[in-house]
Amino acid sequence: MKFIEEVVVDEFLPTVRSMLAEDLRDRGFTQREVADALGISQSAVSKYAHGDVARHERVVADERVRDLVERVGEGLADGDLSPIAALVEIEVLIRQLEDGDLLADLHEEAMPALADADVEFSVHDPDSGLRERERVLGSVRRGLRTLTNASGFAALIPNVGANVAECLAGARTVDDVAAVPGRLVDVKGQAMVPGEPEFGVSEYVATVLLAARAAGVTARGAVNVRYDPETIERLGASHPTVEFDPERPTREAVAAAIDEADLDGDSDALVLYQTGAVGIEPIVYVLAPTAADAAAIVRDIV
Image 1 (cartoon, one colour):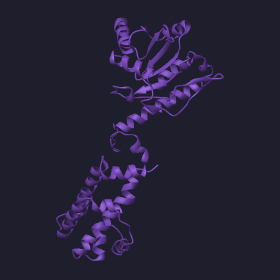
Image 2 (cartoon, rainbow, N blue to C red):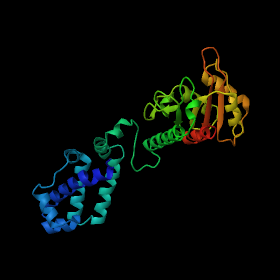
Image 3 (cartoon, rainbow, N blue to C red):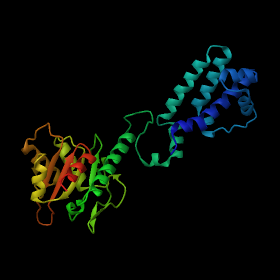
């Protein structure tokens, strides 16, 4: 794990300080004056002057960095720029380069998983897409732990397998829904998880969840389990239950059933189910604010 601040400290700042030290020396500054202007030791200035500090080629080659060095060097030399003002100028550029720019690229090189996430990411943005995706994946993992640790959960897994899913706030397609690839299966009474949660790997549970949200349901998490009238009765004791037609297209059937049910808007969870048809296994879908919440509801009926 490498933080973007480490990239700044280890690669950007030594390069910029070295460039500034060189610029100021070229403007006639003594080694002590350079040290005072940059707030560093004379020994550090000496290392910069003798090339003992490695420069990052991509930072050196960036025109904005070169422009900054020239502008700050000139300002310090002319007295038009104080050390505090110089610091601010450098900090501003750092923030710009961290936001999907040079420093973000260097960060991705140091942390390839960031590039694999395939989403716009700003480390200083608390609402960044990557942060939301990681929160969703974390919720799915918590839901999985809840279910796999629940004695007897395997008996609730349908023949087609179970899944634990959660979608992003603005989800539109299955690619915006995180779930388990390949689904959970019952192996000798134990729920087996085939892999780590990913986005875009669920079809049926994701489709039902997205259809419910399109119909006005606010839930973002879902778990599917085996259908049984007793299961519906137990879930229905605490949450509204809605049956949909398995022979109609899922989105259409779920939307019609929810609309007809005229649900209470205060409910934070919903149970959707279908009782099967020719070649279609009956299934129950538990929807809740998060995947972890949906899993907790299922755990309580085991």
